[in-house]
Length: 185
Image 1 (cartoon, rainbow, N blue to C red):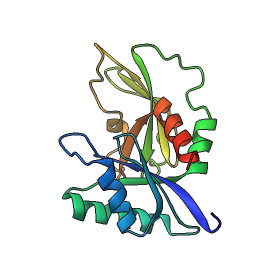
Image 2 (image 1 turned 60 degrees about the horizontal axis):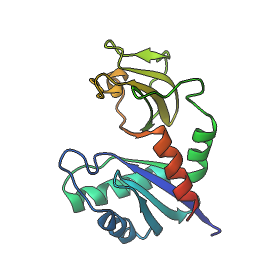
Image 3 (image 1 turned 120 degrees about the horizontal axis):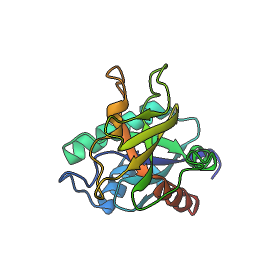
Image 4 (image 1 turned 90 degrees about the vertical axis):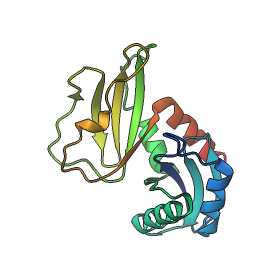
């Protein structure tokens, strides 16, 4: 379609902690906003849609967040990325050289705002259960080291208290699958 941009909305706080929403309902909510070609991928809050090219992304995300909160009764932070931006992220191979084992997971934290300047990478947790290798303005690339199959702390705790943004995480292999599904549209 000419004149449109395909977005991937990475939603936070969907189908976790008792906040359950069916993907059919999410598609309805996005369609109610006049967004086109709305599709979802798996149950973790990944929504594909098209919007007019050149739309104000921050205003669009705010509009989606407001509508979701009104309809669902709780805040749902939204991180919007274009398909091309996610492709660039995947193609950059941010985890090159990291071996995945049963105790190691690769995770992308999609950010609503860039991390504050001056944060030096890598950042490692005091418990050595995660490490943020690097970041771009829209994502932080984190290696999770599981202990007994579990992570004991949240990598977002590495963000300085001055960080006022939001983040939502996806495993890197899931991000690759999300991108492939978005491209099929």
